[in-house]
Amino acid sequence: MANSTIEQRLTGGPRPALDLSQAEWQSSTQGVGDVQVAFVEGYVAMRNRRSPEIPAVIFSPAEWRAFVLDARDGEFDLT
Image (cartoon, rainbow, N blue to C red; front, side, top):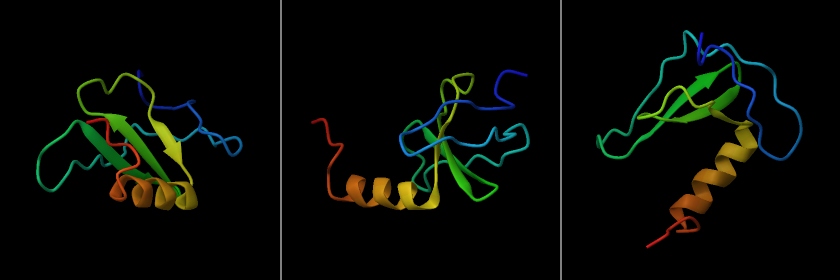
C-alpha cells in the first residue's frame, strides 16, 4: 500500500510508523490549496492532496502549533 505507513520525519526526534490507510484527510474549509491534514494517534499528518503517494510529514502537537502560528505570521509566505 503506497501511503499506509509513513516514514518521513521532521527534526525533533523519531516518529512512530503511523498507519495512515484509514486516516480521515481534511482539506481547507475554503476549498483552496493542495494541503490536507489528518489527526492520527496524537500526531498531525500533512500531505499534498495532488500527490498522496508522497509520504506525509508528521508533526507532534507542539510542532504543529508552532507551524500554524508561524504560517499565520507569514513565515512561509513566498510571494
